[in-house]
Image 1 (cartoon, rainbow, N blue to C red):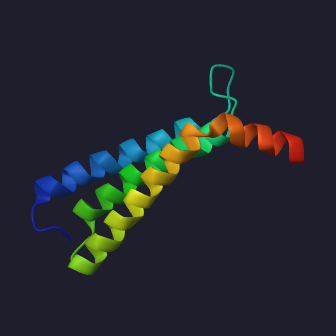
Image 2: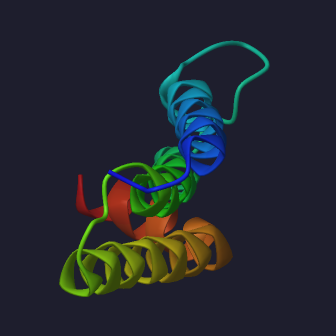
Length: 97
């Protein structure tokens, strides 16, 4: 656990924010984005927040911190890539199905 309780509270708030982003991205609705790729991109963005919050909540060693930070960077990069190329990927999925 992190040594300062204030950072843990902040970490939990960021973690809940990340979970909320993932739920919003995964939910299907009339006003929600219909693109599967964009929903996956949104969920990955929420996962990045959760991984960054886990650094504040659970990371005791530097190896754990580096692993969580690497995971967050990978999730953000994948989210950015999928969001940027969502039309092309959705079209490709539609034509193969």
